[in-house]
Length: 438
Image (cartoon, rainbow, N blue to C red; front, side, top):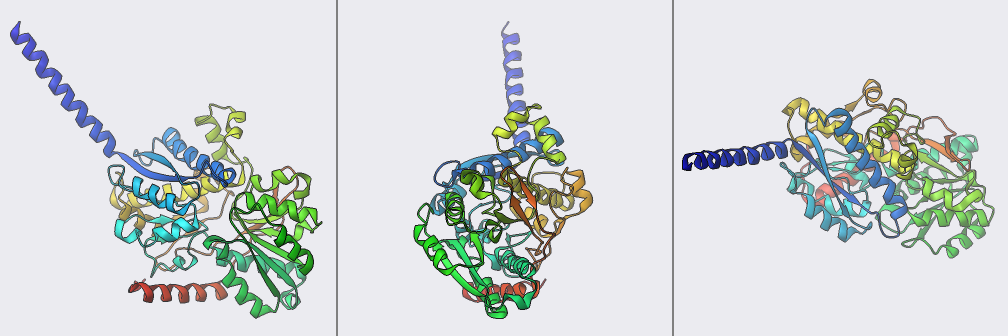
């Protein structure tokens, strides 16, 4: 009897040890990605579809594909309320989670990105600030750990001016044209100003800069100035409630909405729907499509929502910001997959993912495999160019949906890239960084 008890006890210990070992093996086969979100606070209408887009794409990769080459994606949300201090605290809380630590970080805030830039090379965690953050980080020779592809605020501003020039009948027609930039009074909102100033000097248009303080609900003074100045074109770099308030104010003074162009953070469903019919005709930039007409959406509805389209729509599927984070999450996952191609099918460290980001090459064929054919443009990143200056299009709201009203517009690389290199060189000197030879 004693022997039997001893045998059972030994087996129990063995099973326990095996179970612990199996759990450790399972944990070791997980790729952790932190999620800095803002489901609450004044920017929640924008933050919720962003958070849902990331969550759904990572979940899709696990359920449809079995992870990244067999490695499960794990993630954890941390609420920032779009507050820089809280964002940094979330980063510190999550950066060491997972078997290899955080793979990469998507701050989804220019303010948070600025604060994390000096931490990235120390913690060896790359930052993917897709279409936002510090524009100078496009120079990978100086900013080894920061990636802001497919395009930046400076490139976007140049493409906007190119669009205006076409509408006005040519570059020579810009002389004397009044253009106002209504911007969120933050690091984010100010990012486009240097490019707009350079182009105003180059082409002679009259630029007015109008800052709107956080969170942007009070804009009466701004729109009184617009009524007085009568700019022919307005460009807006807003976020959250600021955008819908601005659109309502523009409609109230009967401003021609097809001459009111938001940047890609000012052209979302949450911006136009609150303005009702007043938003009809409003336009914005975009580097991906809106709506749910793509296979990736079909897959999400099937694998995550069990075929329940209504439930998927409750979670923002097809909305502009939801779609944008599908693109963002896809870039991150494909960078990890690229890294695995070099380092093996196992959880990647932040340093290995950094290599994957810098060697990312997403072709038309790969987009088709991912269910994103025509959803966004192919991209190829390099050591020196962490942006790629991808093109954008102008989309317009018709009261129910967004539709494109322009072809793809390439940024003015001959203007923007020298500005980027100059700003990056200044940062390198200030921080005592020796630029890489790419």
